[in-house]
Length: 274
Image: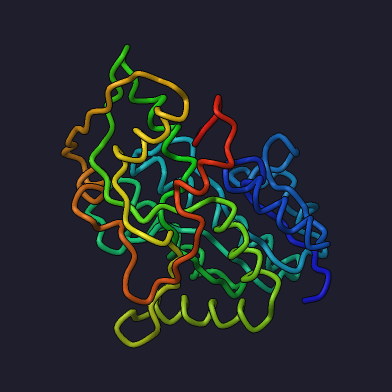
């Protein structure tokens, strides 16, 4: 594609904002899909108009709940609505972001995202999936959620963390470059139908394995925050996957910088990794 019209589902989210920015900087026409823009992927309100004359959809939606049943219902409903409205509008490509390691999930949010992938691939619009590692920006979010006074409790996590901007750039390539986008779509479709017979789902991760608590200490030091960081174990499937390395990329993954430390130096002190 030269100049394309791209609809971004989840345009106002942590990743969606970067996707919109990357596409806009490249000269593409961007249609934001979000409730604040008057478009609802669950009820379908506004979808037909938003997708009119669109070339592709980039789906970076995030559900309102991390609980498996609620998240599954959100993702599968959104995927069906986007696929159906996309077919009617003549959309030729649907790119969705997913999470590394969910094929090994025993439940939780990982299983909901796997259902999301399956719903996307089952639709009429040709689809491509990009599984990615956790975002650099997640560290600050988890720190704020886990803070209790002068102690921050964080889940044990092994991750090859990556910048959201880097992920956005990769999604933009999949949506706008014919060769890259179609190759990724074929690989994802093959993996979705029979992973043993086809190419694995594309993965994108940061340049090296990191430990969440160690990253949080870097953030605290940059903020001048004299907080104590402690790791905690969780019994739920998502916590176990984070602790045992299930979220680390496979050997076929593409690795891309910046490292977390490099990225952190570019962030305002008061909002580092937030």
